Image (cartoon, rainbow, N blue to C red; front, side, top):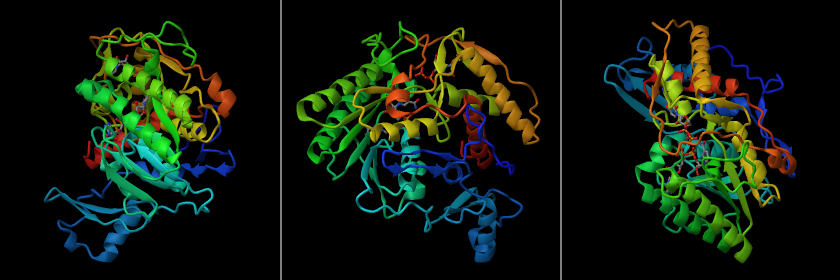
Length: 431
Ligand code: NAD
Ligand code: UDP
């Protein structure tokens, strides 16, 4: 990881130092550095020069010194030492955690996050934990990983449960963020029937839980409910254009029926519901092999491989950075808006343009870090997958008007941070 500080500017050129906001009667702001300390770092020390072959060769004082240097002052981070000679890693139990807000019981919520070990879920968990809530994650680890939330395991406010949402789950809680579902096309198409079961039975079970506990229920729906849209940009009133029998149907129709169920419980049983229609989101902790375009392009560019554009690259997507999404989800959960709300960034790119942008940003970061790749990566064209939507951009008027939410991160700033994350992971050899 580069030692130079990262300066992140928002869409208005103002430096971003915190994320969140002070609204709805509670303060949900957290420092960006605190969040970065949880994801923007390699997991372990790798310097072969400084680290002896075995852990026992390191006395406690030099271990502390190594980690203080490595963790840049964040003393609560776990201790893990890589031994290059034996290619092994020793972990020390995490005993100190990042400081979390101390909330009175009246504002401290018991929050269940399904799919909390996934990409979006883990960032939401970081935020809810830092804000001082009690968080329970349930996840079957199909696409998520324990490592995304391992820095909270053992914290008195945190619980991690291996559980599949297609089975009922009993817990007492005040809010449910129901995120459990694979999200990348290769992952959700890997077992289409399971994806539908997760969408339908999983949502049924979580809505049943919300009904029993009177918890507020938020579902992470998707722009895929609009299918290959005939209306552009897509507002929440558009009913969509989905092929019900195509390869994407298990996900698209799964989410559509999950929304139908959600409003069924709302109308029949008075369950307090929120529906977030999330547009393409990217950021650190995205599985580098999940096949989505942002992770594919960055990893390819960093490896010096050609970027794979599917089709002619004229199809469009609009890309949102993870912190904006988490702001939007927390905002929606704590608002009175029960209608579906689009959460996305309106900055639309053709996939061809996006490949150019990723290549340029990777080159810039490499140059700043004093690296000179052997050759410039190119772009190769591959067949376009069936039913790939041609255009996608959110109309976020509703989110702006009813939540006062708007994305702050430029795509460039988000990409830069994500490039740094993957670079750090590659340097440590974990991807
Ligand atoms: P992800 O694959 O990283 O995370 C999904 C998590 O759900 C994983 O931890 C996975 O192990 C877990 N999971 C899957 N099936 C489960 C089951 N049956 N029981 C318990 N856990 C299960 O994906 P993500 O990008 O973090 O997406 C999270 C949610 O947001 C999903 O509901 C997805 O549909 C929605 N969404 C994401 C995007 C995006 O661009 N990332 C866009 C639209 C919607
Ligand atoms: N895509 C691409 N190259 C890749 C991966 C994806 O050109 O290596 C394209 C894909 O065909 C789609 C767009 O990028 O048009 C976004 O794909 P992704 O899987 O990220 O999300 P989704 O299609 O679900 O929006």
